[in-house]
Image (cartoon, rainbow, N blue to C red; front, top):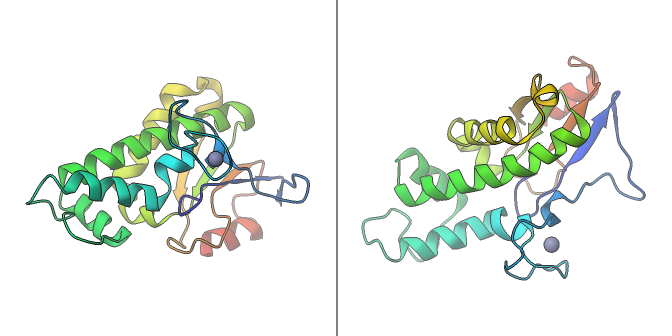
Length: 188
Ligand SMILES: [Zn+2]
Protein backbone atom coordinates (compact mmCIF):
# COMPACT_ATOMS: atom_id res chain seq x y z
CA UNK A 1 0.00 0.00 0.00
CA UNK A 2 1.29 3.44 -0.89
CA UNK A 3 -0.88 5.96 0.87
CA UNK A 4 -0.45 7.80 4.17
CA UNK A 5 1.57 4.76 5.18
CA UNK A 6 3.59 2.29 3.16
CA UNK A 7 3.41 -1.41 3.86
CA UNK A 8 2.95 -4.78 2.23
CA UNK A 9 1.92 -8.34 2.85
CA UNK A 10 3.09 -11.61 1.39
CA UNK A 11 0.65 -14.09 -0.06
CA UNK A 12 2.03 -17.53 -0.53
CA UNK A 13 0.19 -20.71 -1.42
CA UNK A 14 -3.12 -18.87 -1.13
CA UNK A 15 -2.57 -17.55 2.40
CA UNK A 16 -1.31 -14.28 3.81
CA UNK A 17 1.98 -14.86 5.57
CA UNK A 18 1.54 -14.19 9.29
CA UNK A 19 4.32 -12.31 11.04
CA UNK A 20 3.73 -12.51 14.77
CA UNK A 21 0.58 -10.55 15.52
CA UNK A 22 0.51 -8.84 12.16
CA UNK A 23 0.48 -9.52 8.45
CA UNK A 24 2.10 -6.22 7.61
CA UNK A 25 5.63 -5.97 6.31
CA UNK A 26 6.70 -2.47 7.24
CA UNK A 27 8.60 -1.64 4.10
CA UNK A 28 7.79 2.02 4.75
CA UNK A 29 10.40 2.02 7.50
CA UNK A 30 13.27 0.80 5.38
CA UNK A 31 15.93 3.48 5.50
CA UNK A 32 16.61 5.09 2.15
CA UNK A 33 18.40 8.21 3.35
CA UNK A 34 20.70 8.20 6.37
CA UNK A 35 20.54 11.99 6.59
CA UNK A 36 16.80 12.10 6.02
CA UNK A 37 14.08 13.69 8.10
CA UNK A 38 12.80 12.18 11.33
CA UNK A 39 10.15 9.48 11.10
CA UNK A 40 7.55 8.79 13.79
CA UNK A 41 9.08 5.31 14.20
CA UNK A 42 12.17 6.88 15.77
CA UNK A 43 14.48 6.55 12.79
CA UNK A 44 15.44 8.97 10.07
CA UNK A 45 15.04 8.85 6.31
CA UNK A 46 12.50 6.01 6.13
CA UNK A 47 10.90 5.31 2.75
CA UNK A 48 7.62 6.57 4.18
CA UNK A 49 9.10 10.01 4.92
CA UNK A 50 9.80 10.33 1.20
CA UNK A 51 6.90 8.73 -0.64
CA UNK A 52 3.84 8.68 1.63
CA UNK A 53 1.11 10.68 -0.10
CA UNK A 54 1.21 13.63 2.38
CA UNK A 55 4.98 13.89 1.82
CA UNK A 56 4.56 13.86 -1.96
CA UNK A 57 1.96 16.64 -1.78
CA UNK A 58 4.09 18.68 0.61
CA UNK A 59 7.09 18.44 -1.67
CA UNK A 60 5.04 19.29 -4.79
CA UNK A 61 3.51 22.31 -3.09
CA UNK A 62 6.81 23.57 -1.80
CA UNK A 63 8.50 23.39 -5.23
CA UNK A 64 5.43 24.76 -7.05
CA UNK A 65 5.52 27.92 -4.91
CA UNK A 66 8.46 29.04 -7.03
CA UNK A 67 6.56 28.59 -10.30
CA UNK A 68 3.58 30.88 -10.75
CA UNK A 69 2.32 28.97 -13.80
CA UNK A 70 2.31 25.54 -12.16
CA UNK A 71 -1.14 24.04 -11.61
CA UNK A 72 0.16 22.97 -8.20
CA UNK A 73 0.88 26.50 -7.09
CA UNK A 74 -2.08 26.94 -4.77
CA UNK A 75 -2.83 26.99 -1.08
CA UNK A 76 -3.92 23.40 -0.78
CA UNK A 77 -3.47 20.50 -3.17
CA UNK A 78 -5.00 17.04 -3.18
CA UNK A 79 -3.77 13.78 -4.65
CA UNK A 80 -6.27 14.33 -7.46
CA UNK A 81 -4.65 17.70 -8.23
CA UNK A 82 -1.27 15.98 -8.28
CA UNK A 83 -2.47 13.21 -10.62
CA UNK A 84 -4.14 15.77 -12.86
CA UNK A 85 -0.84 17.68 -13.00
CA UNK A 86 0.88 14.46 -14.12
CA UNK A 87 -1.66 14.07 -16.91
CA UNK A 88 -1.02 17.68 -17.92
CA UNK A 89 2.72 16.93 -17.98
CA UNK A 90 3.46 19.46 -15.24
CA UNK A 91 7.27 19.12 -14.98
CA UNK A 92 7.24 19.44 -11.18
CA UNK A 93 4.74 16.62 -10.76
CA UNK A 94 6.41 14.44 -13.41
CA UNK A 95 9.82 14.84 -11.77
CA UNK A 96 8.45 13.98 -8.31
CA UNK A 97 6.55 10.95 -9.64
CA UNK A 98 9.69 9.62 -11.33
CA UNK A 99 11.67 9.91 -8.10
CA UNK A 100 8.85 8.23 -6.18
CA UNK A 101 8.76 5.44 -8.78
CA UNK A 102 12.49 4.86 -8.47
CA UNK A 103 12.29 4.74 -4.68
CA UNK A 104 9.38 2.27 -4.76
CA UNK A 105 11.19 0.21 -7.41
CA UNK A 106 14.39 0.04 -5.35
CA UNK A 107 12.47 -1.25 -2.34
CA UNK A 108 10.46 -3.75 -4.40
CA UNK A 109 13.69 -4.98 -6.00
CA UNK A 110 14.85 -5.99 -2.52
CA UNK A 111 11.53 -7.76 -1.97
CA UNK A 112 11.92 -9.54 -5.31
CA UNK A 113 15.39 -10.75 -4.28
CA UNK A 114 14.02 -12.07 -1.00
CA UNK A 115 10.71 -13.58 -2.09
CA UNK A 116 10.95 -14.11 -5.86
CA UNK A 117 7.25 -13.25 -6.28
CA UNK A 118 5.09 -13.89 -9.33
CA UNK A 119 2.91 -10.86 -8.93
CA UNK A 120 3.09 -7.56 -7.11
CA UNK A 121 -0.25 -5.90 -6.47
CA UNK A 122 -0.13 -2.19 -5.70
CA UNK A 123 -2.93 -0.32 -3.99
CA UNK A 124 -2.50 3.44 -4.00
CA UNK A 125 -4.19 6.70 -4.96
CA UNK A 126 -1.21 6.97 -7.33
CA UNK A 127 -2.72 4.15 -9.37
CA UNK A 128 -4.65 6.92 -11.14
CA UNK A 129 -1.35 7.63 -12.90
CA UNK A 130 -0.17 4.02 -13.07
CA UNK A 131 0.62 4.34 -16.78
CA UNK A 132 3.31 6.86 -15.86
CA UNK A 133 4.34 5.31 -12.52
CA UNK A 134 4.48 1.57 -13.15
CA UNK A 135 7.04 1.67 -16.01
CA UNK A 136 9.45 3.57 -13.70
CA UNK A 137 8.94 1.00 -10.93
CA UNK A 138 9.33 -1.93 -13.34
CA UNK A 139 12.51 -0.49 -14.84
CA UNK A 140 14.00 -0.11 -11.37
CA UNK A 141 13.06 -3.67 -10.40
CA UNK A 142 14.70 -4.93 -13.61
CA UNK A 143 17.88 -2.98 -12.89
CA UNK A 144 18.16 -3.76 -9.19
CA UNK A 145 17.04 -7.35 -8.67
CA UNK A 146 18.47 -10.69 -9.68
CA UNK A 147 17.55 -11.51 -13.29
CA UNK A 148 16.53 -15.06 -12.44
CA UNK A 149 14.04 -13.76 -9.82
CA UNK A 150 12.55 -10.87 -11.75
CA UNK A 151 11.64 -12.70 -14.97
CA UNK A 152 8.07 -13.52 -14.19
CA UNK A 153 7.11 -10.62 -11.95
CA UNK A 154 4.05 -8.65 -13.01
CA UNK A 155 3.04 -5.35 -11.50
CA UNK A 156 -0.72 -4.94 -11.18
CA UNK A 157 -2.91 -2.18 -9.73
CA UNK A 158 -5.58 -3.20 -7.27
CA UNK A 159 -9.02 -1.94 -8.12
CA UNK A 160 -9.38 -0.03 -4.88
CA UNK A 161 -7.17 2.98 -5.23
CA UNK A 162 -7.79 5.49 -2.54
CA UNK A 163 -8.69 4.00 0.80
CA UNK A 164 -5.87 3.98 3.30
CA UNK A 165 -7.44 1.29 5.40
CA UNK A 166 -6.60 -1.85 3.50
CA UNK A 167 -3.34 -3.69 3.38
CA UNK A 168 -3.23 -3.50 -0.34
CA UNK A 169 0.25 -4.10 -1.61
CA UNK A 170 0.75 -7.81 -1.87
CA UNK A 171 3.80 -9.72 -2.90
CA UNK A 172 2.37 -12.90 -4.28
CA UNK A 173 4.20 -16.16 -4.52
CA UNK A 174 2.83 -19.57 -5.35
CA UNK A 175 -0.70 -18.20 -5.42
CA UNK A 176 -3.29 -19.58 -7.76
CA UNK A 177 -3.85 -16.80 -10.26
CA UNK A 178 -7.53 -17.48 -10.52
CA UNK A 179 -7.92 -18.47 -6.89
CA UNK A 180 -10.59 -16.90 -4.75
CA UNK A 181 -8.21 -14.91 -2.56
CA UNK A 182 -6.61 -13.24 -5.51
CA UNK A 183 -9.98 -12.53 -7.10
CA UNK A 184 -11.10 -10.95 -3.82
CA UNK A 185 -7.99 -8.80 -3.61
CA UNK A 186 -8.30 -7.64 -7.18
CA UNK A 187 -11.93 -6.76 -6.68
CA UNK A 188 -11.20 -4.84 -3.53
ZN1 LIG B 1 10.10 5.06 10.04
